[in-house]
Image 1 (cartoon, rainbow, N blue to C red):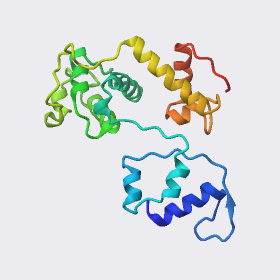
Image 2: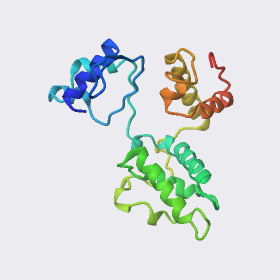
Image 3: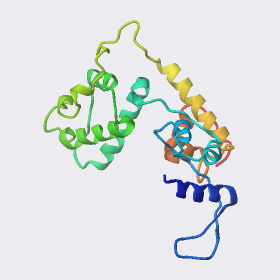
Image 4: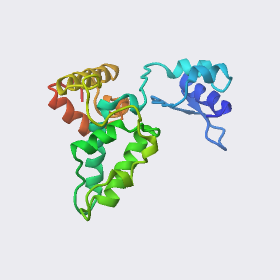
Length: 216
């Protein structure tokens, strides 16, 4: 975001006012901002490309998310989510992955992170979702980007998370989001918005994990 726009955004956050392009009337805004970046903003501040005051305005509740290649335990959950989305959009068949194919996805380096994973699942649905032929990851997954030091077969030293530990982490994450949203699930500033989830999906996960909603 250019520096001139950063100053305008800072004004909106500090004063809650802005003017539309071509207007002289000052308008008021009452919003919450959810911002994301793939850059180190502290380094951007040092380089003079990002305002320090805007950084602190935005860093009310920061969440640092490691790249997907460092979150192998998240990949099966994300794959199932994207397959569910793709299956709803498809008019024929259903995409199914074997355990070996799932392990293959977990050892891929994912330079494009979650967006690349979503694109791969959508590409697989287009090519193989209607059941014309068996799913072939070699046709949709570049070999050169696979992690070279990881084995497709789990070893005693390989990092993994049990189902119980995964549910514990998910529960802690959902509770943290509910606390940040003051117990609100739906609407602007709600836990669903903070997590980037559909409210119905979040409500289902809360019910599955036995978490009571504090507010609607």
